[in-house]
Image (cartoon, rainbow, N blue to C red):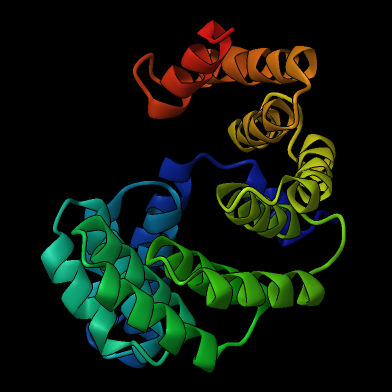
Length: 259
């Protein structure tokens, strides 16, 4: 006998949506069973990139506090950021909601609010990833010593060889490079690049950015041929995956034009 999961894998999204619709039609409206069916269908449409349908069914499943973040995501995906932010505020006791609220604050240029939200998120869920995010906000605010300490703490907490650890290593190396501490920055950046090549692949944007950042360090230490090779690796990926006028693409081109 085939498992239920394997059977459902044979169906297209439209078939599964029809299955859920038929299930809802057989139930009495506003009953717990009907709300559960609307919940399933709302989450289904959110996963399948139909936020309007997702919003409709998730609203039919309310009140259910567990659905608030998903409803907010559906609203945000339809280009209604103010309303989405208001809904995320209703569930700010959840790490996911605080994280999204900080993103909204950053998007409108309110770095002070974003930093406070990231601090709140770190207090709520003290993980290496959140420590890195908060450190980056402090770094952007010019609080270098605090940011460096948090980056180092995050790396100690994170798993060696994981792409999230590589991101933190990259961020710390960037901070050290900005303060001209190239000898400290280079091994961190090399480790970050090595991990990203292994886990994300050589033709990933994050891998290319790590290569470009290593090139900055290598050039500053006087190893021009190696720097140019790294810039070229990065530029090849940027030109393939990013818009022509993306800042990273332009920076890599300009770096290669220097002699």
